[in-house]
Amino acid sequence: MTDIQMPRLSDTMEEGVIANWHKQVGDAVARGDVVAEIETDKALMELEAYDDGVLEKILVEAGATVPIGTPIAVLGDGSGAAAEVASAPAPAAPAEAPAAESAPAPAEEDAAVEPAPAAAGASRSGGAKPKASPLAKAVAKEKGVDLSTVQGTGPGGRIIRADIEAAAVAAPAESAPAPAAPAAADSAPAVASDDVEEIPLSNIRKVTAKRLTESKQNAPHFYLTSAIDVTDLLEFRAGLNERLQAADGPKVSVNDLIVKAVATSLRTNPGVNVSFAGDKMLQHKRINLGVAVAIEGGLVVPVVKDADRKSVSEIAAESRELAGRAREGKLKLDEMSGGTFSISNLGMFGIEQFSAVINPPEAAILAVGAARDEVQVRDGEFVARKILRVTLSADHRAVDGAVGAAFLQQFTSLLEDPIRIIA
Image (cartoon, rainbow, N blue to C red; front, side, top):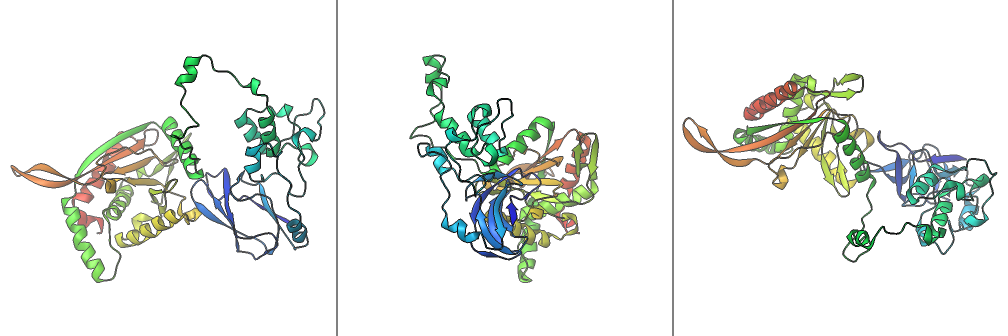
């Protein structure tokens, strides 16, 4: 028999959620078949089988979160599948613990062993360190349960998640700290209320929060803003789209032209296309541009690889395809990896100017606002022009102010003379 384990589906993934199973116990599985869908820190991704066989056991039910490397199912020759279907698994915890009842079967539990109630667990020797699964340790830390007080019911007395859940429910109420004073209790925000809805964080949002918090804490950001006259750019785009549509080509957006202009500017100013790596700098030879896409439950950044080598129409077609798959949760790992610089455009929401947080390990990100009519003085006369504001956020450990300014200067000149973008 072969264990199917929670795979590492992204470079930042530490755990995954079983979104749903495509195969059930007893189903034949061929190499390459989609066995399940996994929600990672970046997207919903398909888990393909690496071997042929029969799905004999499902160790982790849909909805459960488990660390990478944890067995989630067993693939065999089919001899054990019938017995697995015939025998329903025992409850993971006593009936009086609602939280444990609703919790899906954790990956570290051996599906062939029926866990007994926590009080009847195997005993440990007095000085021995309690054996516990990684998931059980995490749950114990979250719930404030002392592992040394828990009897394990897993194989060999191992402490599993159900044991922690049961111990947390059985903890005496008097052990909970009382409020310091009535005034403190009155000022505490109400958690359980008809006016408040608790929304669990998706894996994507959890990891986004973690990584961007680390980015703001560790990378000293500095910001450079340019106001760019894009009147000619908008006229150029309109004419370009007429030609592309006549040739059955894809329409080009302002963002597509910005992506191409960024790629060209990075080629001229490679000092921005870098990463800070502790005691060294990483100079990226390829220009891979991440384009932020808002999806339900978070933000993902699909990557346009080698953007400097692609035409604007190629960038337009690829960007639309990537954004569509991002919203459907069908991006592949390599389509979200390897970015060297990112672009975040909120102009479509009417945002005129903002500062974006750097997406590590990159050293810079460009925030793009909306083009607005502004009065300018040209040849002694007042004229209305379309002005676009962009802000470069850069990691000062890797990018000097003058280097960032030179990049923005080049980028501005391209947008104000748009024929050079496609030249």
